[in-house]
Length: 156
Image 1: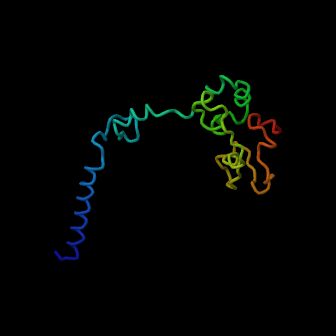
Image 2: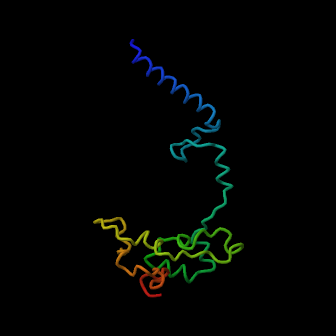
Image 3: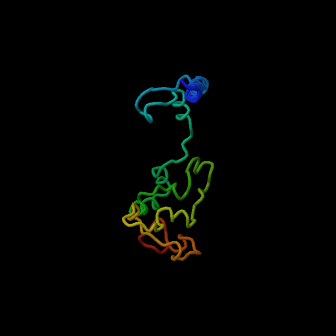
């Protein structure tokens, strides 16, 4: 065989060998197939306990209803029923024990995540009223005119 064929072949073989040697040092011993409950069944077995010990930051609406029943009920009866409280109020970890008040995101950008008009016909966002950011009261925050807990009432 000619050298112009053998050189790239040896380089490719060397590269594959280097990857296999590096894999020996970089992939943990407990990585492999340990069941079908994770993506493609591959995960690090010792990582399961790490994730179980990881503190939960988002508590869910069930935690909010204990103290904020009126707001949760109005939200459940509104078009925003699918939106979790912590999407706007931030993670409820340690609330109310350590954190007295959760920060409330009243920025226009938060509302525009669902309500910005994309200009596409038959958009997946059709269930949320779409607004043109350039035309609809640009210099104001949405919550100045709209109550997110009662969006169908519009005015705060």
